[in-house]
Image 1 (spheres, rainbow, N blue to C red):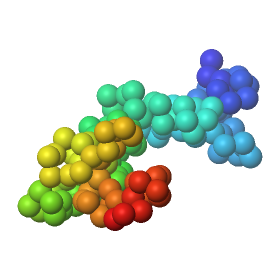
Image 2 (cartoon, one colour):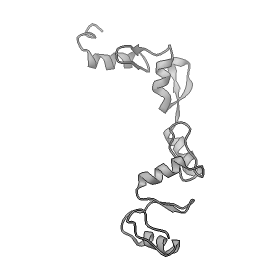
Image 3 (tube, helix red, strand yellow):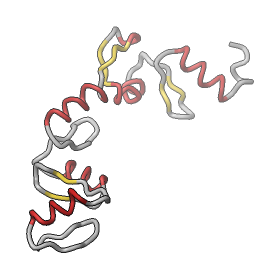
Image 4 (cartoon, rainbow, N blue to C red):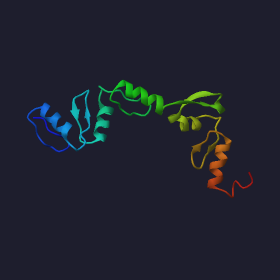
Length: 137
C-alpha cells in the first residue's frame, strides 16, 4: 500500500498518492523518472546522486534529474579558465586551488598551506595577515 513519505498517510493506490501530493500544501519533492516521492529536497538530491538512472557530475559528485540538467551544471559550474602563469592552459575553476598548489609557477605560503594565482595575490593576502612582515614591500 503506497504512503506519503512526508506525512506517512497511506493510500489505496499510487494514483491516490499522486493526487495527495499534487493537492498538498506541503512540499513533496518527487522524481518523475523513477516515479518516487521524497520527504525533503535533500532526500531527492540523495536519490539523484545514488541512482544509476540519473547522471552524476564526475567533478563534484552532484546528481541530476536528467542529462540536460547535468550539461547545464557542467557549463555553469565547471567553466574552464586560462592560467596565465602556466602559459594559458585551461583549468577547471573548481580545481583551481589544487592546480595552484601542484604547479611550480604559482607562489605558495607554506605555513598556511595555500597557493596563489600570482605574486600579487600572494602579497595581498599575506599583507593583510601580517602587515608588519610585509611593510617593506
